Image (cartoon, rainbow, N blue to C red):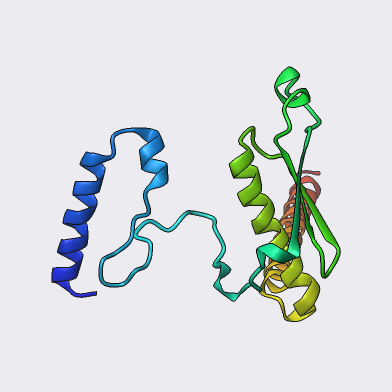
Length: 164
């Protein structure tokens, strides 16, 4: 990206920000760079879904059911829980993370796409590799914490033996 395109995208972004003062309009717009056609604002914490297997809408069966759990009447009387089934693999995902049906539909598709990718690719899946790396990192952190605790105990024992 050269300086002129960066300047152009900044001006474009400024114009979009001044025009879209309504929150609902802000959510509807896609922020794309004019030359690169990539999002200017990558969403934090989102995984790159380019390497995941694509889902076809014809392979999906979608139902809207009543949610359960905390929330009282807001969750017990509305059918905003999404149950999504991938017919070829038989994988079923139930999503009731938000009160919005659209957000639940979107999140259910993301979760189902990850599960289908894991189902078909197995250990070669990037999701499996990420989970394994996270578990390994957690075990290493636990091991380091245990080692430091042992060192502290040893130092304390040494101090107590010197004090006697």
